[in-house]
Image 1 (tube, rainbow, N blue to C red):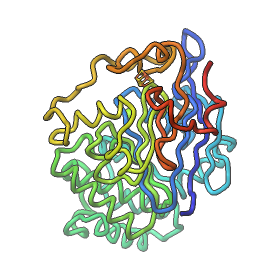
Image 2: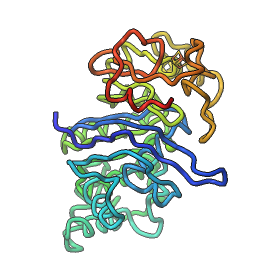
Image 3: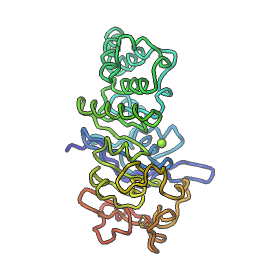
Image 4: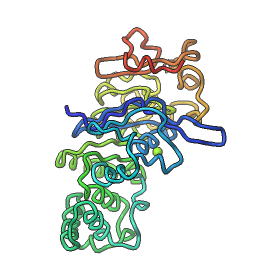
Length: 336
Ligand code: SF4
Ligand code: MG
């Protein structure tokens, strides 16, 4: 498969009253062309920071990239200036967020907003752009698109608005769509429809998707690969089959057990994992998960686990798998 994005050892931080605090720690993920990768974890795990860093929007949020590379088509986004990034953000990488209303302008019709994006990115005339906007509304599954195009966001349901936001993102014909909790604000039926839509668009347009979610159920629906994040680091990563059939990290196992109806699950109990994520800057010693881990051993309190290879395509940062080969690439980067 052709690599589109490869994030290597991405470490980010924020300057606070207490000094520089690390938000993510040596994150490595790769997204191939046409693939969907899900970053999964509880809120506060650093998923959104990672996506903001990839887009270099972290610079505007008071944060910074401290180390690492963001290889996009052989170009390092971490080394670009904001003017170069604006070009890439507008044309090659698009981003959608949880609340569609915050991305839409209440005083313009949805048709006008899509058309504006088309004019900006594809150099179309106003009339052409409006015609294409209607096409895009149709593509994202909005019925009676000619009529809807003339309506304002408040006249549409939340699910319809998220479809409009997706249409605006598609207007720039992105190679990569980054979607941060795109279905979290929607009710369950609409959630499923939006995931279906993303899958359909991906098949038709061949774009890659990096989807951020706290919900393993969502990841199960759409992911080719899953990266599980905890307290700023990826603790397990592999194909969706590997993660669901052979979950290795105790945190992943806990996340899976919180899926209602999942085999081995505890039936809809929202958090089977006791405790909370440590706040930024207050990482425990050793394994970052040890205070919450039901299987913690002495070594876990003292030494951070490297990535161990569960299979050639599946890694986990947990001392329980010490008998497996360590990921040579990551071993040298381990915090001592
Ligand atoms: Fe639990 Fe130890 Fe594995 Fe961390 S390294 S997840 S504390 S068993
Ligand atoms: Mg978030």
